[in-house]
Length: 272
Image 1 (cartoon, one colour):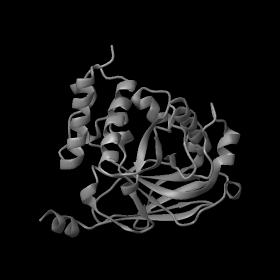
Image 2 (cartoon, helix red, strand yellow; image 1 turned 90 degrees about the vertical axis):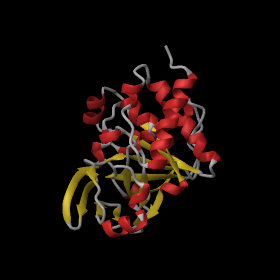
Image 3 (cartoon, one colour; image 1 turned 180 degrees about the horizontal axis):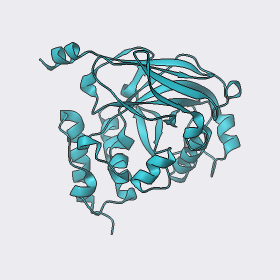
Image 4 (cartoon, helix red, strand yellow; image 1 turned 135 degrees about the vertical axis):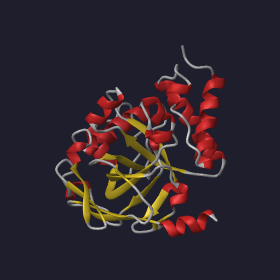
């Protein structure tokens, strides 16, 4: 049976409080054993509405769980999605405060910016290709309000797909200029490779992930619109972040993007 509204409200409150205080909570699946996928998305929507009421603006969506191995680990057979807000966005090499992050890890991704609405029923691959204005290299900074990243599907979905922040590169490319399936990726931490992969790691091709999202959002009555940003999913393994880290991701055909995190001294100064 679906969880009662009071249970969903309590779970949403717990995640909201953890995000505000930095005090992590136990897995939702343990505290509320009856939660299912529909419940988890309902919890996500509650906190999305809170952020909108607080003055935030939705700029797009992120897709998670696009690697088959991760889906198998979490016992699901499809990706999930979360909401991207305006205050999550950082520019190439712009310093990022550690204070706003929660157990951060980085992933190399391809960002899609739409130039047309995808409001038709059951959007297809051709619809998505026609709708994409340009693509960019990106680094997603994932985070979890669940203690120790002890997550399964309902935990991550309820927690806005474990979202945190994102960094966009400044070199937009047209789809016809790059083979997204074959484009290789290397992420370096201060010059040392820490993650490698390719577009094929993301559901075989990042476009497949965007098609999945477009169909999912259309079915929910919330179709993707012109101007929306879509982070299509990780091209390689995610890597934990420490204060002072500098990550640079190069994606063949798309260029590079850099994420710069404040130092431990800066973190200490902010805490005083």
